[in-house]
Amino acid sequence: MIIIFNFLVLIVCFYLLYIICENYFIVSLEKIADKLNLSSDVAGATLMAVGSSAPELFIVLFSLIIPGNHLEIGIGTIVGSALFNLLFIIGAVGIINKSYLIWQPFTRDILFYFISIALLFFVLYDSQISLFEAILLISCYVIYLFSLKFWKKIFPYKDFIEEKKPSADFNSSKYFITKFNKISIRVLDNIFIFKNNFIYVFFFSIILIAFLSWSLVESSISIAHILKIPEAIISLTILAIGTSIPDLFSSLIVAKNGKGSMAISNAVGSNIFDILIGIGLPFLIYKFFSYSAIDIVNNDITFSIIALMGTLIILVFLLIINKWKLGIKSGFFLISIYLAYLIYEILNFYGF
Image (cartoon, rainbow, N blue to C red; front, side, top):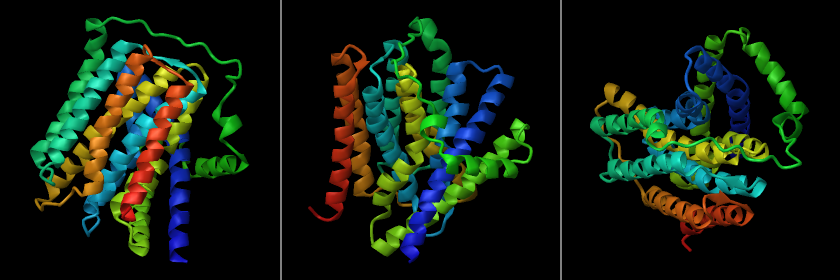
């Protein structure tokens, strides 16, 4: 009975995270970006990245502060989410609509994603993350932000507008928002009593996301203990996929409306934020209040970090061979790699 309850908690938390991020948090971030007159590149890499990656960030933070050394859940969620974004989401985008990428900005994001993975492997090599290493991760993200401003001047390019498919009438209200969703939003509207005040919505959304993330961590720990499954496996699969569902839906909607290149770039950019800020910031906060060391890496997460680098190389070669185009065949190929990774993790756990 307890195991059923914990799985129900996971489902409800995933659902509420999607509703809150999509309908309140990201909306408030867009208004803040308008107020600050941020360019679309900078707003997407900062505020919008926070919106889509906030659950992962809080999961890492709570996995740090909850007694019992559960950091494998936090790191595993970041790594598993990155694999899901790179393989499943980008693959699904290719299946939904043929996408043509602009190589200049995509090369920039791939370069920083490569550096992010290399830094992640470097800081986890000794199974601990120091204060210097946390600052190093965050500093790399700051450099990435500066690159957004200067890259287009160094490598000029024009935005490419893709053609919509004839059936491009694909929106969240038609496909994803059911009557239950509308009732949930109506209830949340009553909770967000000052919903017209975007600053209030922003901070209250963070509080709710933090609470739901804490619930996810606690439920995952309980499930892992009851089923005697390593916490890393739970985080690399269930938590990683669950926290990436909002990104998947958003990317499919964007791709169906002829903006597949934007969906692909957002998936890679979100991974950069997850690794550099999603891991660097929680550790920076933790190190200010505690000097105790935490043992981090196990074989599951180490293999997944190596898999991150391997899948990145596969994606780059796939796009170069196809002249920066992503279609149905490439999409199914990427998704099949992700499914093979999941099967490997499951079989490896059972000793096959």
